[in-house]
Length: 291
Image 1 (cartoon, helix red, strand yellow):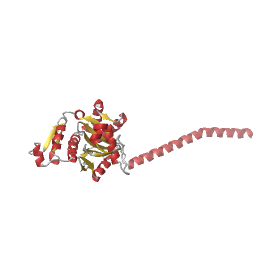
Image 2 (cartoon, rainbow, N blue to C red):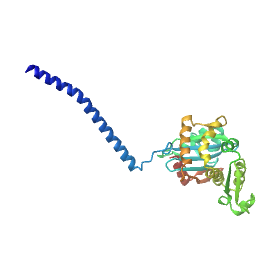
Image 3 (spheres, rainbow, N blue to C red):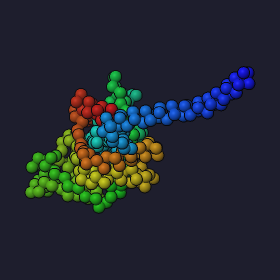
Image 4 (tube, one colour):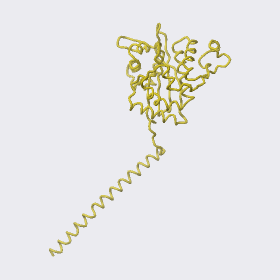
């Protein structure tokens, strides 16, 4: 009996040693299958569409034209909203500084474009309002033209910016539409600004021209990061290689979206002597772009 009992327990032990790993492996595969089914169900509920690289990212940049009187364009690249929004800011616009206030132009000329972007962010963040990181990229007018492409063209209806009398001053009274290349753009901006009497409207002229090139040449949106890389020796920026790669992914995503919008908006200002300051409405516009 003892020998038979020993054989039984020995056989049972061997059987369990064989079965337990199989049972564990079966339970593992069942658990994996359940997880996969749950993931498939969740994907189906979301429409089953994969999230494209860059689709969920938003970038904010202060683009600066380095010249005797610097030009400033605040840009928001919004992947989730599928929008690129440009907002030109007057160089005479006041920003908060440690010693009181200064202007964007004075700050850029004395301390650099990076400092101008920093003070703009700090001004918008006054109080309890939080803003996201604002990158900057500064280049001469000639460099910006090379980044866009000297022969790239755009059409701008000057009637959106000027009255009939103002258009007549610069030769657009009979046909209000200006067709220009990137090479012609700085001269057109200067001519438009000469007809406008406030820094805010003069800034809008720059935004309107830039927006026309971006909206009518959508391939430029995806091509700009590579153009900045090629002209890196001629630009100043705090965009690191990883940042530029992330921005490029978002711009590539936007360029492939049929519903993508390129637009410009104005930040309202009011006179403060020889300078201007953002109105409450203008401050809200800037804060929304920086959020």
